[in-house]
Image (tube, rainbow over all chains, first blue to last red; front, side, top):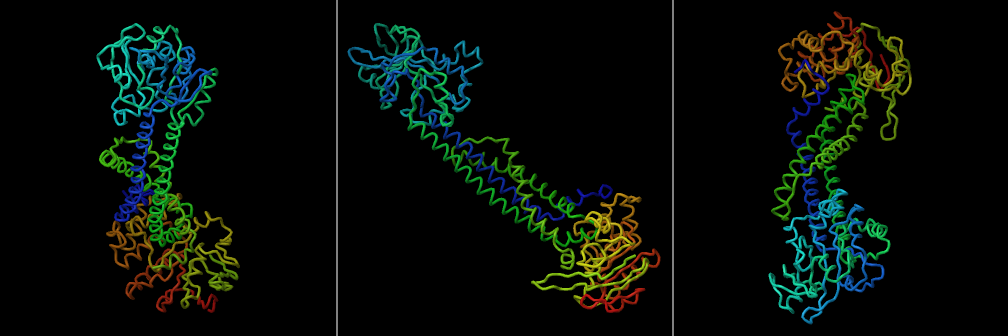
Length: 409
Length: 221
């Protein structure tokens, strides 16, 4: 061991010979980082969950023909002028970030058994994803969800009150319809039954839950079936888009208007504003927590390093007498701080992640996975805190009068 | 070896000037055993640390073998402390977490010109001072006299011309004091090293070849 005696040996000896202080110092750094990582892991997942729940409120952007009058978002597409269905492909192939769940519609008022309803043609999401032109441009359904990261897992949607969610229909046969609750009640329609629309028979595939909107008075059929039934050709009267709220605030509407200049693009302000404000609030809360913990952690670690340097003042004086320069003394002490920072950062990351993974599901119902990038952040934050915390006491000690230090007993 | 001319060190203490050294002029010949005496606060330790390249004088000049010591850069001064002089202090000042052998090897870490293998040299020094069986002991595992002998071995690590000893027997009983003084005397007589020892012990004065007395920073004898 002695044959390889070096400055590194001196650092390690100091660390290991003072085990109790080592443990207390490491514990301070580890706990500080663990708290930061634990809270950040939970906050990060919470933000995603909140974002997903907000996105599940449904489509928040509506593309309409220019001449449409807009009094009510939910009925703006009814009997509106039309534009070509090809507009859907234009949006999809533009690959705008923040565009999710495109849903083209064609709506007309018709009468069924003398009762006025709104017949709405929709494009089921599985067909949107399989359109040849989208495949040719490398787009798949998953690509459309990149920006918002809204899960396609149906189980995610079960957390939301169904009445708040505007249905996204995954698949719909050409002869199937989905029926709004009010229509089903008035026409006494039930799942598995039949209904005749404009002389053509359809099967009721599903009765939708009550939403309190005009959707309750709609019958949804395949867009192409409705186009054929109404003789409109490949026209739609609206495209609903689930736009990622942060992308909307980053100017998504303007970009959409550039792609489709002859359309009218509107948003549901209440939903969008809620989404934006909630996400902003989550970000602020997360930042405030991070700042508080980093400051408190820095003070705790700095306090430990300060005590360590103060305790070694005499040693510093001795090292100066045997020829150490101040620069070498800095290196000796700061290398130790760096080692403690790196070890404490790693342990803190592991501890904080484990705590979040164990406590997250129990206390907040959140499933938390390790976030590898946080390891890098832990190492950077812990090392920085340890270096900053020890820099000033070392600086101060290295500049003290060695005569005074050496005369201390 | 050392030529001091009007060497003055003034401290500021609570707004007032304190003359730790007041126009000291002296010559210290190479190979001498100089004893510096004086009461507390007389400036003995300040003089020793000034000779050791640690405390910069306020005015005057200090030449070592003809070169002005405080015209050295900080790195040159560090090298001077590492190779030309060796310190022996009253409180030993051993690094507590290093063994006796490692304490002796520390100054050698900074000396790339050392011809001898550091571990062998440190072991030989400890052997010469009767500590061959204590090489791997930590300072707290050594007696006070043994700790001071390790400190002397450390001072000799880089084979310096000068040993600067600040009250080396201040914490020792008379028997141990005599033992340490004999070691220093041997280093002076057998190895021709210059010894400059600060002490308030009358017994220690007898070991010197030259004695200076300081009083309130002034050289009085």
